[in-house]
Length: 326
Ligand SMILES: Nc1nc2c(c(=O)[nH]1)N[C@H]1C(S)=C(S)[C@@H](COP(=O)(O)O)O[C@H]1N2
Ligand SMILES: [Mo]
Image (cartoon, rainbow, N blue to C red):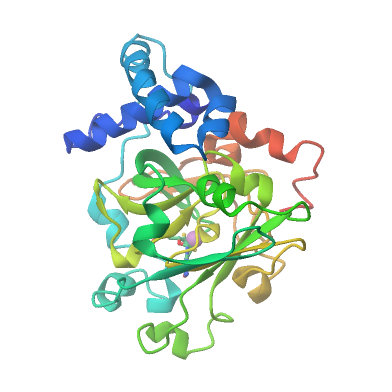
């Protein structure tokens, strides 16, 4: 039950009923068919819908049983208060102070919006955002989120697997990485008028990381459309990596053979590696990564390897030196 452990955070305090039901459906799929099944079905819409409905019933029973949750579940991982996540942001295109993005992104235009899928794929295309999202089933994922700055949150995202998109595009045999790019529009994004980073912001994942079912493209949070300051209309969420990997307001995915450059790695390669898996044992050169502070909490708590998702993603890094590949 790999995915159940990953989405181990109770969704019970999330108010909208539809959202709660959606999450149970996700749990159902995981419980009913397992990780391999979820992987196989991710690109197959018809089979997917059928299997997830059947699974929902199974999860309804299994999930209600005592002691069914993974060891990381339960008290201590409550969903973070919504306003803390929407009023305290890193989105340098809209300013470098945490309070600036909410204000400066108020009038950001997220429609019309296109997403390009290009590079080493059999089916490159430019999609309107609606057409890009439509083939996938948007579901809720409650994930821990850990910024490299040592603050963290628990966020109920709405989204769908990045693997859906990649499978549809059909990566060629030589494909090894995927690069994602944020909109470049200095007229709308005041931060891009200053050379804070080498705009546009880019990020990247190894293809197997990108295909992992925990990696999602998000279109919403807290049961609603994604706020502009959180990366509307489409942002990446990779819960086992530091927050800066979760690139916002994405307009392009490019499949490559070589490891793509990333905005923060270019800006400061000693501090921000390509992998950036959450790792309490590898300190940032300027601060410890052993602990973190949940938004809204006073005391620090220990940071977990891979942000608590080691059982799910650890195998991706078998044989790698995670101190070297930071
Ligand atoms: N395009 C873009 N994406 C970005 C950033 C950014 O400045 N620009 N900041 C990153 C960092 S450092 C973090 S911690 C998260 C913050 O996401 P949140 O504001 O939704 O919590 O977004 C990431 N994605
Ligand atoms: Mo961050």
